[in-house]
Length: 274
Image 1 (spheres, rainbow, N blue to C red):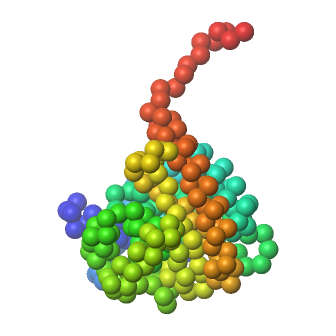
Image 2: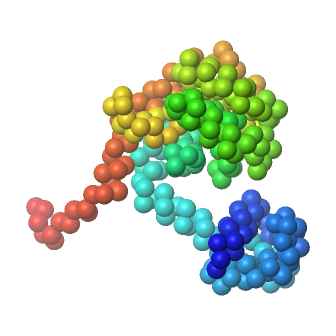
Image 3: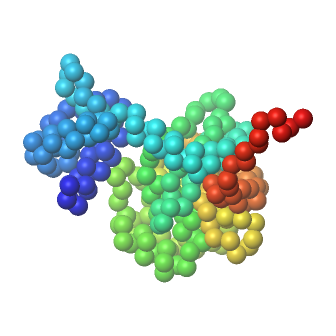
């Protein structure tokens, strides 16, 4: 396959990943701005390799579960869920809101774990497969604020102020606007997103480091999010205290994740333990 074909194939997978049900060939062709015959060839290849399924009755296409299985396998290999889930669960119980953790991959943040703490009223429960738009999310700004300003602004400028999904009405639309928000984030030590990532929601986030050493690199971010009516400014101090405590716990245990990935399993001979 050519580089262009690989790119189109990946784009096709991303489109299908955003659909709860099956999609018609003509719809996919329209969204990809490609001839139906070319899309059909890509789909046929993906079906052959088990990444896509086709409904025999409707002839529509959908992702198979192979991609989900691969994602979970990768998370298991990284030991992410076991290491962080207990911290997230405690944070969710304490704040009674939706908590998520994202890890840094190159110049991107990727969701890897979540915990729902809301037990009554409105429940905020977004798709974990959503793109983390750096300039419009509390998690994104929490990480960007740890970088030199020039580097942070360059990352966002290279991507622009649009996204694959609809953003909230308060998302930054210029470098100058983002510069002010990152300055505020650095000064107060935490990031917020008030109807920036999406309408009707708010979030508070802090970064955590790869170890408890003060000079350790940032490993990811952790956040508390919920409906706008609940994540109000008067709650920020309490939420930030809980978040920073969780971030410290994560920094303390994060090196265990690395050791778990590299450690040779201990094999005990049968009958050796009495």
